[in-house]
Length: 255
Picture (tube, rainbow, N blue to C red):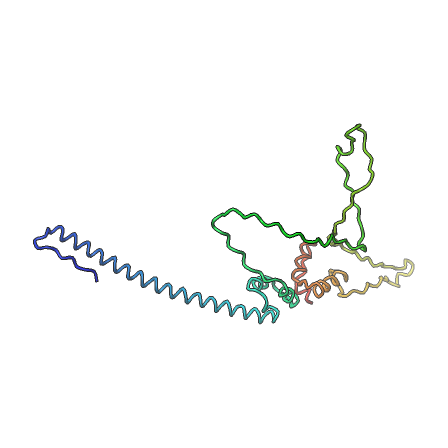
């Protein structure tokens, strides 16, 4: 309780009034500070409760995801489980492959102060395993890189130089899949003399799925990519639409 100042008798009325107002102001400030302290204490308790509740919900979410993706997902971090949630139709093979990778950690926070970088130590000399050679069974396509016009002229006599050899290097290259439309034309035959015999049409070739818009090769590639390469059907559908403009839904591929 704040102390009450003692005024001498016959004090100036203005001074008495000023001290009374000052005392009232101090009492008001004290009450406000006490109210703010109680509010801060209540907010701190609520914040602690919220943190515990978030931890509980995160643990429940993790257990639900582990139950969804199987035992292999127990090794995954929360970030890896978040990535799996963004990809619908994840197979067990993908979960197993993801569990064999190193856990994904959150990126470190950038330091506020910019201190000069220390000089890096020179790495110990390690024996290089050697450049890997490309498989010999792959076909080779030669690409000749010509010299510049300045290199084709001798710097001494000014005559045109002659090719005496090549510096060779090999890189693995790829040709993207090329989609095309196969037009199947079945012969129709008829006798001009015997119209009553009707028209004979060549038999339709056997196909995996009759009256399908895609060929057997496309169906085989879809199955191989699904079960051998663990590529989900929704990805294959998106790639097919991107490369050809043909929209084949996942439900059709499932069928």
